[in-house]
Image 1 (cartoon, helix red, strand yellow):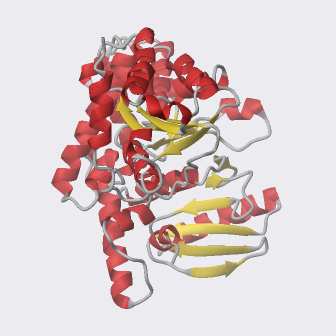
Image 2: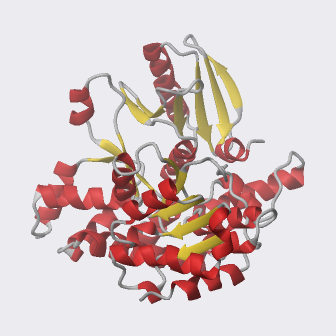
Image 3: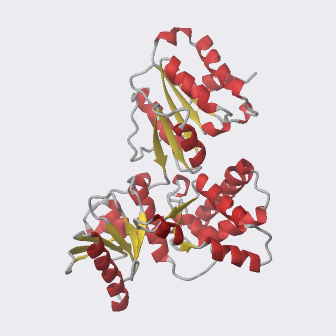
Length: 424
């Protein structure tokens, strides 16, 4: 028998007030199951805490229960065990049977057949249900079947720059001092990444934290979850991918490279391991923008990481990779906005094509455009894309430059990335 009553009592005694609000707007009484999906340590638990804190302003504490399904007191969980939670709750609080109650289940994928239990709660009890999970495919598959029409999913990412500023208690502004603080904070954000635990810590400690996260993702969310047999290959793949963010990923080339290093693998194994890293929200692959599915399949997809800080954990190169770090930051910001993201491949590559966006639909990212050749390459690529898509605006994000360029195709706005992210 699982110690549900102890866990429920612990939940009621927990302090939920010391959380920093995020930019996600989560409804409290939507009539749907709310699912928060994202990588480990991205802040899903804190979002649940903030929801509980909001509800405690108007609801009795015993109507709000948080359960962490990674609690070692629950291992191993069986499908039957979850039913014991509801029995234990109403034995403790029988007077709440006629009240609206709120249940929060963290890391729900640890419970076998969880979707049946959650569906039963939603369909038969007077309750609101909130779940979190760190498996993209698991949750999306279950949502698409058992929970169809019953859930609202939200993706949770590490901190955006505006959230990072809030965590650091830095207010955006236009004064010289405010701008200086913003620039310094952005430089730190670029080095240490956006995971909440790394906000404001020194570079060495941030790297240690990120190394621990990467190990957790590799072993718990990939190797254990998918019964990976070749850990050496998985480690090599992770190192390659995080060292090469914002670059095209050619699986054929990577397969040949690994084979030339003496690794024993099949193409299917390599493909599976990549999909496992996507499932764990560690990596994202972006397709080329084309109306032809054949072209989409023929061209390599571009690779981005869940957090740009992870690059420094695996990449010992000393070169300046600020441009690729900038591009990864922009990708994550566009994903937070819910954009459908592609890249453009014409004479010049366009970093981001947003087919469903109103404006801008084309974005290039370049750290330094002081060299005329670089400036012309970035602008000409956008002009070509504007003419091809019939749009009259585009955006070029850089480290420092701010200006507006009028071209034959339309207007290109050049902005510092920190300014675009901070909204100043």
